[in-house]
Length: 372
Image (tube, rainbow, N blue to C red; front, side, top):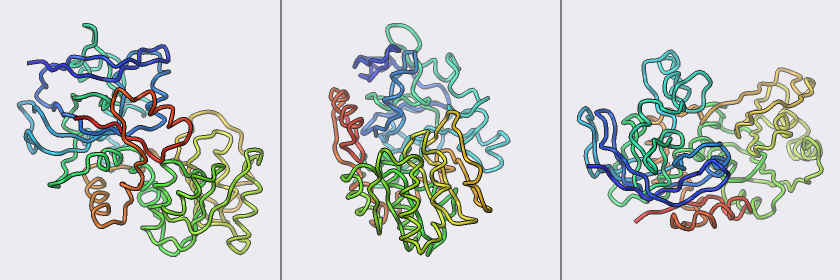
């Protein structure tokens, strides 16, 4: 029996509506999840401009409602976190351990089939009688989500805070994984984090968890710098919008660190002009990490790479969902990973317009939509 699901639907013209979609019964390898919470980030707002109708949302947690006949390991009532980078476990990259850039299922990696309109596993969701895509093959801003089994990670918890669990599946994983999985930050290191929004705060938190000795947060917003202190920053720098390439910030960083520069710098601003800025912050043979996913052409002064500096551009913190999500939940349970502190406000689905306004105005560290 099909399910009617109230959903946030990007209409393809820069706007969205709250209307119902119809979910078919799950195919043998599919699961229907009753959503309990969905995190919000700039990507969700960006989906309004993708030029096609789409069920919005790519972060979330909920409860298994229905399972396909071939599903093993999940039952109705299981609590789950949804993961947008669903691995196939058989392609070259999955076999190499790079599940986050699966060649068959990734919705963002060039050459994969995961985000192709009309792809077989998208056919189960309809709006106004027509097949509609689901953002990142999930569509979590909906009362119910129809997903592949590979998109689920089970959570063993009696009194689960679904809002906290929901935000793990993108921003938290990206920030934490960029520090731990990608940069492999070592204890005692010095760090600079450029941009103290949602992802940047998670980078700061991960640096603290990893034992960094000096952690400098940088932002143009004084409020975000106050948050940075709560998430592990040992020092903060208020940047000037007119500081091209953050060159003045780089001088301040070096003064704070005895003239040498940081061991690691993480760019979390998503501002293309600052794509090379972390290179100016690090010492020779230091590591610069472009966390925010800038995807456009920029000009870089190659002298910034001198000498022996490393620049990496990881996706999704090299996420291995079945390994990393339980680790993150474990760190949360012991109080090290600050998820509750990250959530500034919860919204109902009908308040999504307000939630986007707050997001764009920088009012929230993280906003979450909750469902009954």
